[in-house]
Length: 279
Image 1 (cartoon, rainbow, N blue to C red):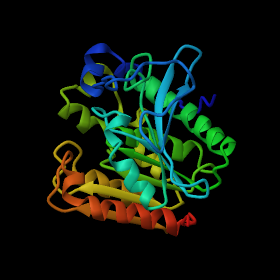
Image 2 (tube, helix red, strand yellow):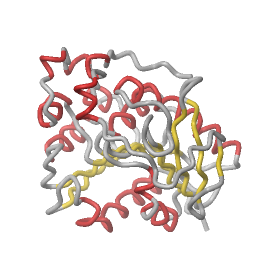
Image 3 (tube, helix red, strand yellow):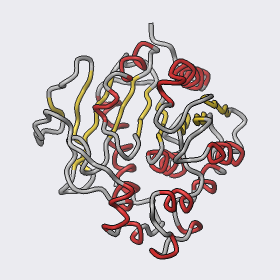
């Protein structure tokens, strides 16, 4: 298991902080079966449980289009679970993209409880599992990392730690700096001992990313300001980067306001980066 993460997030792992950062909920009707790969509850998908430690597993749902198609490993926002993407998954599949959505501990069918430390740690195990699963099931297309909102932390962590395993990076509603976000959520960074330069370091990470990049951000995002998306975009040195603004949308209406443009930009990023369109 990769232990690349070196930042100390323990100051954010206090119960009074975690209550603001994470909103886990179970997947309705899930049995909680411990089998690594359970019978899919949604047609055209594979439900898996990914071991992240000897005692904890993270649930994931793979919406599968074609073994030759490119794949997106997706990390969702803090109040979501993979089952929330059961409607979006088929839209990715129709574009010829495998959509692989992963939960965090305590979410969906996962075990354990979520903390910032475990979230940042588990992403590496999820990537390793997904790579092995795809290869073992005959999937040969390129792999992209994508994160929405809180999930941008996982996606940027993996892009920085494993650029050789990823063909591109997609950040939707991602944060550039954590301190303003923590303050908005009711957490005083100074009071809990959080320092930006020792935390997520998103600007530092994206400044090392030179492969294809897509940043998507809502014009009127009321949780993570539009300026955060621009900051991340401007910090990236990639010559293959694109910024998509969703006009008139906020953090939670981004899909309703601009789903067509959202998916078109993802499709263009994935296939211009070398993903072969499945027939």
